[in-house]
Length: 274
Image (cartoon, rainbow, N blue to C red; front, side, top):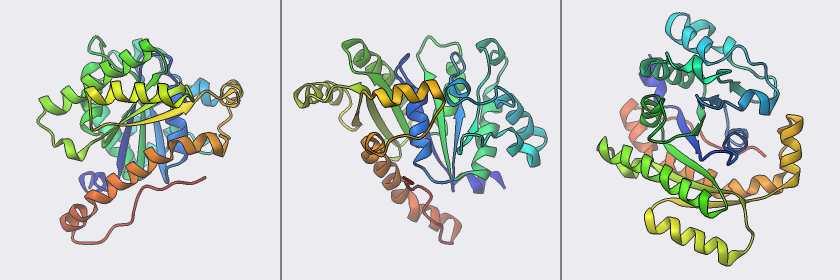
C-alpha cells in the first residue's frame, strides 16, 4: 500500500536561483541522510548526471514508466555508481514538456516505498516557468524546502523571489505552515560576520520563520565538481549541520502523530553519516 509507505519517508526539495550550486548542495545533503535517494527534477537545466559523472540513461522517464506499469523494476532506473542512490534527469527540457503532474506524483510515491529520504533537486523555479504545474505537485509532497542562492545583491533578490513562491503555495493551498521547514542556504558566502548578519536580517524581515545557513567558497569543492567526486571534506560538510538537525527535529515532531495513525512504533528515518 503506497499510502502507508509515504508516511515513512521524508522529502527535502532543493530550489535554486540559477547557477547557485543547487545540484552540489543537493548531493551534499543527500550524502548525509540515511537511506536517501536524490532525484534530478530540474526540468530545464538538469545537472546531476554530468556533475556526478553518471550515465544519462536510465532516467526519470524510465522510473515513471516502472512506477506506473512495472513497479518491481523501479530500482533498475536508480544508479548506485557514485556510492549514493540517484535518479538522473532528462537530457533536454523538450523531453519534459509532455510530463503530467500525476506522473511526477507516481514517481515520488514509488520512490517513497523504497527510500526513507528523498532529496529532490528542482533547479530554478519561478512563476514564469513552463513547468510550474509540475513543481506545484512536488511542493505538495515536500516536508522541507531548501532555497539556495548566491552571496550577492542579485542572489539575495532571487532567494526572496523563490521564498515568496514557496510561501504563496503554502498559503493558497491553506496548508499548515507549522508542518513545513523553509531553509535558506547562502552559497559561496562571505565569512565576514557583519555582512552575514545584514543578509540574514534582510531575509528574516521578509520571512521570520525561515532558517539560514552560510556555506563558504571552497576551491576544493570547485575542483571536485570537475572530477565528478563526492568525497566532500568534513569541514565543509559541517556547514550543513544545523540544517540537517532541523530536518531531523521536523521528523521527530510528527513522530507521535505517525505512531498514533498506524498504532505501532517506527524508527527514526533521518540521520547523518560522516
